[in-house]
Every structure is written in structure tokens, then in C-alpha cells.
Image 1 (spheres, rainbow, N blue to C red):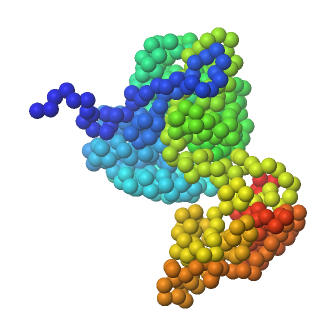
Image 2 (cartoon, protein in one colour):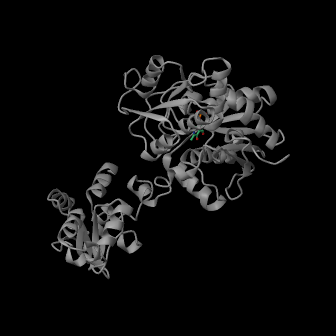
Image 3 (cartoon, rainbow, N blue to C red):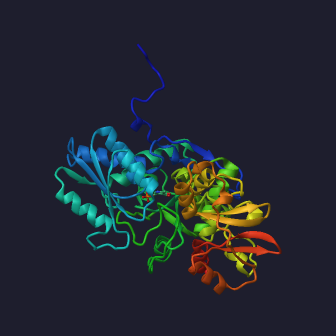
Length: 457
Ligand SMILES: Cc1ncc(COP(=O)(O)O)c(C=O)c1O
């Protein structure tokens, strides 16, 4: 008989009781800054807590019956948390998701057994295909359905009032002065506000808001205008969530996407914590708050989800550059349009003696349809998908043929000082301009490079 083992009886018991770590390398002035690692929940985010709480509450109130269907409108962490709890408790789950969401998230939700219903992302509240309206309608039409509605569900803040808050209090032995939160549904801020009102009402709640969101203006001015857009995921709103309680909120900071990404990348390099983009926003706001303080304070914020969801975005240098967050030196010539530079080892290329098989593998791996063929520092050809196809059709063993036998050699070269209109004309004719300066290959300009460049302008 096995007794007293340190084991959990199922994965849902591992939700919560997340570790708290003090950040060491950042300048926080007179303050100490602590992060609660919500990325260590089994579904990878702070939302596991509310998923469990909202489903438990629906069971207790009889709104969710055995064999029932859970419905929610979300593509984010709440969906993953709900899918996890639903699969462990034997419920069906349907998630209505706007069609701009990443394939990785959709694949994960489907792998967990969720039914994913894609809907339009270009329509607003009130439109029948708006994801929240659609989820509500489906729940009205589905027998034994329960619509979670995290934005209006009291069991959302309750999860933070009864678990996150007491854990923070215990971990810092009550010596806590401020908590920095982002706002999505406002469940975290509201639940913590309710908890600290009871145990330590002098705790200052501080809001970290992405640039473009309306929450900061509402907190500081009591009014707000139109919302903008932002890349950081999971926080920021274009309305004030109905469950929001700002009664302990003393401060709010607007943080740009760029600041958020820089901090999140820094936290990985310097503190070894793989945090998501919104954690960058929270930590950036927490640092600002810390540096403004005139006396030592203990400040807590969150790593709300894991950075592994953002490896192809914020942690990818090319994604950062394509979206204008990190730049090469500005030259005021065509070099500025080249996103991948040969001199910085950023160009994916082939050598003339490489095999067609290598070309195929590189195109698949990097998701690109054409590659330059480079001999030392000069481009001697370009190989694209149609060349690959020709090789495959024409040879008995095409995967052993060399790239030089199939590459196109009628190349169009421009120097850095040529005109933008030359680039446009060449791309319009179906060719790819190769930028060469003093005999040195600089890089290619593809259509997407030009689109990104014009978009940034
Ligand atoms: C990724 C992410 N999701 C959710 C939240 C909190 O959202 P809510 O206001 O819904 O509790 C945060 C807060 O920082 C977050 O970073």
C-alpha cells in the first residue's frame, strides 16, 4: 500500500499555488519586485484558476449538468483552461474563435478535444457573427449548454479572491505594498481588490495597460475615447469590463508593445523566465511604479502565461523586425527595405552544388518559396517552387540533382542607390530584385519586404 506520497490525484489539483520569484537584475529603485509564476499552471496560464472556479460554480448552482456542454467565446488562455477542466470532468466544450487567431492555438484546443467554431474577426459587438454574440446564441440553441461568459461571471474574480490573493499574502508574509495587474476580463484585479479590501486595504492596485487600450484613461480621467490596436495578447480592452472594481487602484501606466517585448526578452536572458508578451507589459509598469517610490516597498506582479506561445512572434528577431520593433541601421536607400541581410548571416540560401532535396527542405523549414543561390559572396542564381517542380517532373532521381542545374540565372540586380520605383517594377514583373553594393550581396527584396516597408512608412 502506497501512503503519504507527494503526488496529486489528478492534474486539476496542480492548478494554483504557483511559485513567487524575486527579480534580481532589474533596477527597481528602493523597491523589491516579485513575480508570481502563473505560467506554471498545467494549462500554462493564470486562466486555469478561473476555468476551474467557473465550472465548479456552475456545477454547484446546477447550471451545468453531467454530460452538459460548456460554451465560451475565446481563443486565448481561458479556452485552454476550460478545455483542460472540461476534459477532466467529462464535459463537451465548444469554443467560438475569431478567424484571425493563430493555427497553433486552434490546433492545441482541438487536440484537447474542444470543438472549435471559427467566426469572423472583422465584425463588432451586435453583429450576429461577432464571436461573443455567436457563443451566446449557440448556448441558447444547445441542450444542456452552459455559457461561461468570463466577462460577467462572478466566479471569475472569486477565483482570485479565494486563491491568488491568499497565496500572495502568505508568500510575502503579509508584507505587500502593491500589486500590478493587466486587465482582460478584469477578473484578476477585481478578485485581488476584494481580497485585499478584507485583509490589507492599504495595498495599492496598479494597472498595466497596453498602448491603445482604454483602461488607463478610464482609471486616471474617468473617461475614454476610441481604442487603438496592440500586439500584446490577453490584456487591454476597448470597453470597461462590467465586473471591474477599481476601488483600490491608485495608478495606471500605458506601456507600448515595444517596451513590453523588450522587457519580456530581457526577463528570459537575465532572469531565465520564459514569460509571455503581457508579462512584459506588467513588469514594465511595475518597474515604472517601483522607480517612482520614495520609500522601500514590496511589489508583486505576474508572469501570466508562458513565452513558448510567442516563440514565432516576440522571441523571433525577424518577426520583431517585420513588425517594426527592431531595426537595422537606417541608410536612407534600398538597403532599408532588405529585412534579411547576408552580411549579418540572416539570409537563407543555397550553394550551387547543394541538392534539390536541400532546396525543398529549406523552403519547407523556413516557409519560403524562393531561395538565392550564393557562391562565396555573390548571387549566381535563384531557385523557386516552379524550379523544384520542374526538377521533380524531369529527372529519374530529382532529389540527387544539383541546384545549379535548375536555378534561374537571369537575375535582376539593383544597387542600394537605385529607386523604389525600380523595385516596384521588378516585383510587378514577377522577378525578385537582388541588392548588390560594391560587388557585395546585401539581400533580396521580396514582395512581403516591400509591403512591410510601405506599411511602416
Ligand atoms: C495573458 C493574460 N491573460 C489574462 C490576464 C488577466 O486577465 P483578467 O483581467 O481577465 O483576469 C493577464 C493579466 O495580466 C494576462 O497577462
